[in-house]
Length: 280
Image 1 (tube, rainbow, N blue to C red):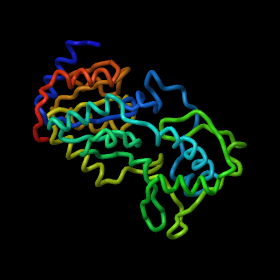
Image 2 (cartoon, rainbow, N blue to C red):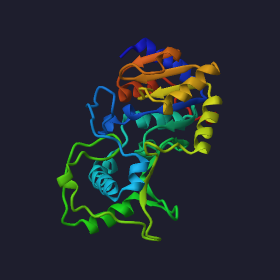
Image 3 (tube, one colour):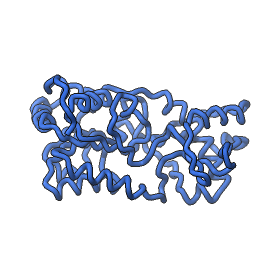
């Protein structure tokens, strides 16, 4: 680990008003794989799009079978040292907020409070007809009851689903909304969907008010996260990036650190005052 760079990072964070932008790389130490980092594997499975999901009962069967298997790992994942360090920075009053591209809920599980889930969360589902939101745990109970004789396993993807064959998917029974019978969808943004504009605006406002933007575990290869780095750069806000591997925002960064997130963030918190302040 580059001790000099961590010291520089600590100097930036010590000023407070930090907005964290986190990505999949922050959760790999919790056993959730990522797509592009060094722990990620080449993933050939085509992602589910919103259009296919709503337009095909077969696509929904495939999605929910895969997601039902994958949820076992996502639902049992626990915050790692990186999540705990971010929550500790918030507790000390150094963070203005957290924008996460992750859908695993691990920031909140670690104790962080001001978290915007840019892409939603897998811990809940939404009915596309009546818009009722219900806990994922309740859906899992209903799926187990409907598929008590069904069993499958496969490689887990970052989005919380498993790679299954057509033969494994066959026979899986999908359940619909218990209130109105409508289609149930995880409360996450699929490919082909847009992040709700008010949520994007809230993220932009948070970034615009930051003293420092701290990017953690995101390769910034897609616009969804990169746009906030671009916004911070345009406003002259210092940008610090901690990630394993290069990112799409390195050219705009004041500081980059290629290092494991858990040990680095633990080291960072150890270098900062332990007093509890008020978030900027």
